[in-house]
Length: 169
Picture 1: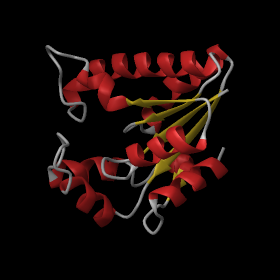
Picture 2: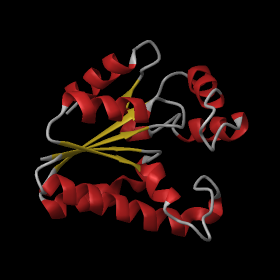
Picture 3: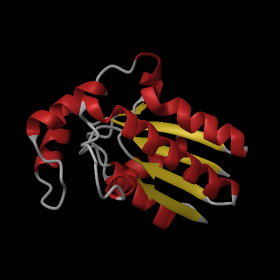
Picture 4: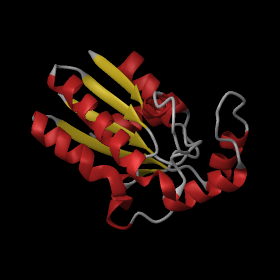
């Protein structure tokens, strides 16, 4: 089985695409929404985009990667969505290798204005600040050798983006 890691800046459509993959296009499947793992911290949580959240982010990333690998080794196509830059990819690679499952890493990166418009327009999301969204976007602007993992979804519907993700596997 496999882990499909759908990443990108906040507002790029990760959760919508991951839901389409898990609910309609893959079977059997699991969808792990990384925000849920952060929300599980009830005391002492630090906003994950702040520099002082590094130790917390390392812990949470390890938990998510091991959970994803556990589901995948149990026979589920596991879709993980979250703001996971290449700086945390090795954690997923290690967990996938230990579990003997495949890993596909895809970065959704529509243009900056699309991301900022989507991100600031979400009413039920904790992160809608345009400046912070821009900083997160900028962290994905130049991924060096990982640019080959980028999918420009600016002009794609969520369904088309999900289909494009499947083709990258």
